[in-house]
Structure formats: C-alpha cells, structure tokens
Amino acid sequence: MKRFWMVLSCLALLPLALHADTINLGGTNLSFRSPPGYVPASEKKYGPVLAVLKKAMPENVLVREVYVEKGIDEKYGKEANQMLDDYVVVTSNSQSDGFLVGLKDFGELKDEIARAQETMQTAQARDRVNQHLGKTTDGAMKIGKVRNMGVLASTDTQISFMAVMTQSASVDGELLTFDQAFVSTTLLAESKVLSVNHYRTVRSEEDVVRFKSEAPMVVAGMGFKEGAAPGVTESRPSSESGQASSAMPSGSFNNLLLYVLVGGIIALVIFRFRKRGNPKAPAAAASPAKPERSPDFPTIENSATSVKIGENPDKKDNSPSHPGPNDFGRNK
View 1: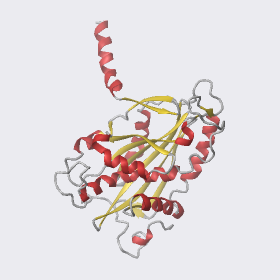
View 2: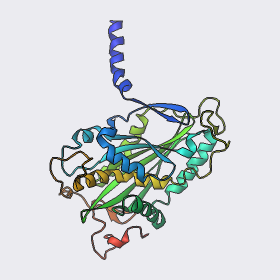
View 3: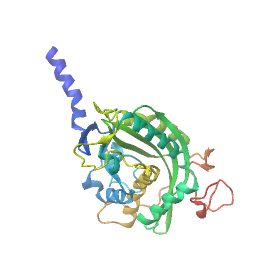
C-alpha cells in the first residue's frame, strides 16, 4: 500500500515536471513552471506574432517566454474573429541580466517602479508609447485611454501594478478597438530581476475585478525561487557575465512602462495577420469580420479616465466620455 501511494504521488507531480521551464540570465539558470492553465507559445505556431512582439520591444528588453491560455491556444487558427485574449509575457533587461542583485538594490528598484506606474495615464506616457508603436507597426496600432489601478502588492522580492487600457488598430481601413487589462509583476529570483506581464481582454467591470484577483495566482503558480542568491548582499556582476562595471547601470528599467504597454499589441497582431491574409500566419476557417461586442455588454463608467468599458474611444462625439480620433494621447 505504501508503494501504491508513492507511485500515485509521483504521477501527481508528473505534469509539473513536463511543464518545467528554464531561462538563463547572465549565466544563472532560473527554473520555474509554466503558468497554470497556460501553454508556451511555440515558434512554429506563433512565429510571425512573436517576431512582431520582439521587434516592438524597446532596446535592452528581451522577451524570454510567452504563454497562451490553454483554451485559446487550442482554438488558435480554427476560428474567425480570434484575438489573443489571455496571455503572459516574461521579459528581462539585458542591462541587469549580467548582475546578481541584492535585496537593498531591488528595494530601490521597487520604489522607482512605484513612482513610474503613477504616470501611466498621462499624455506624455501615451504619446511616448504611440510614437514607439508608430515606428514599429507603421502607425497601424496605438493605445488610447489608460486607467491606472495602482500597485496591487509589494513585498521584499516583488512588486505588481495593474492598469486597463484601450487599444486600436487600423485593419484595411476598418478601426478595431478593445479594452485590455494587464498586471505587471517585477520580481527578484535568485538575485535576478525579471518581469511577468499578464494581459487579458476585458468586456465589463466584472472582468476587471476577476482578472485582478486571478493574475497574482498565475505568477505564484510559476514557482520562482524568490529572493537573493546565497551570499549576495550587495549587487555585483555575475562571474559568467563579463560585465566590466561593478555597479548595475542606473536607469536600467527606465523603459518599464513602455515595454509593459507595448506588450499588449500582441492581441491585435493576430487579428491583423488573419485580416490581411499573411501567408505565414495560420489561416482561419473564414475571412474574419470586425469582432462585435456582446449585446449585453455593459457600459460602466470608468471613474479614473471617463472611459466606459466597452465603448469605442474613436466614436465621434463632443461628449468628454466619447473622445474622438484626435484624443488619443491627450491628457484629460
């Protein structure tokens, strides 16, 4: 009987072993699990999409892994009007990858992130993102209003913040808009700094509340070994990194908001590939039309930005809660 329970325990752990991942940051191998309920976005299946995402990322930001919600992944390429509605992007910064970071320096980094996230809904932040997207997507994609929901959690080894943003894309002269929430978590794992950015399409305030409660569990389920590596009290270069300087470059995460907001474009990239009939992208069952929102889609006022969840931000109207095309990037 004892042997039976031992075998059963091993079988229970087998799925975790099958979904174990490893990334190398400056000579340090970080082992973790795929987010529960998500699968890796393979190069074979999502190659063109991943290429656009990597190209759109700011300098020094490296896309380490992308995971897609399992149900969405199973339908990918089989249904029309499909976007990537739920996915996770793991990134690191090449400037910090070569350093072993101590808790003190990570604490200072957390303070920088807390200050930076407060600027997300300013005109300057949106203009900067849209200027970057204009270059990398030929002006086809941009973000609109950003509703900052602030810091969700902060511990010695991680900090996470959340926002809801409106995105739009021009597809063959048609304007597609949707609302997307994201939770960005920057964490210290074995003295390495990385970010886990979770994106999900939202269609109501209930969706926003649900995502806010579920996103932290996704990061926790990845099982990173958080904290400083043994013997690391102050930040220093990794022995394998070849870094000449003993101090981590200041401002290494100055582009944090830029790459977090830019990471949301992947949801629209798939729709554009399908619409334009890109031969490298998996073909849909039929030529997709512009997705329509659910008939019972609520229009609940967003008090932070005067944007209503489910509302087209490019609808021409003089009302403050119905910004026109020229209102993208304008601070209300």
